Length: 103
Image (tube, rainbow, N blue to C red; front, side, top):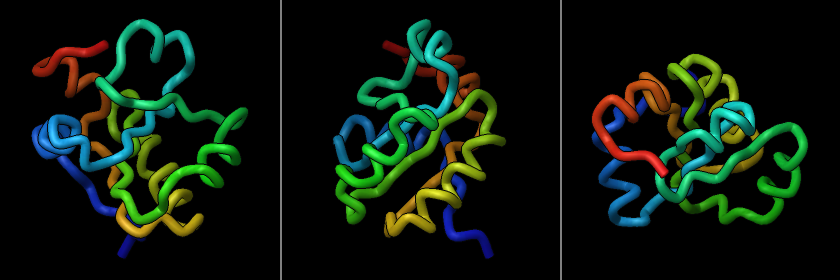
């Protein structure tokens, strides 16, 4: 069993609305700048160490990528870094922007 769970965009929307999770976007900076989930923070190789060290590991963490594939590996990584409740968003940002607004 993987150290993370899959989560659909509707549950992520609830978490965003309730501000009950940290959302990380692992897409490239240009894609993030073009649109992202409200409250999502861009995380890359350049800032992952700082993010991991400075983020509350007790708060649920949702990882978003383009289509929900790359986020699985990143979610496993964050779980192995001590985050207690980690999710990979099914369908990625492409699924999100088909239904919900982006920033």
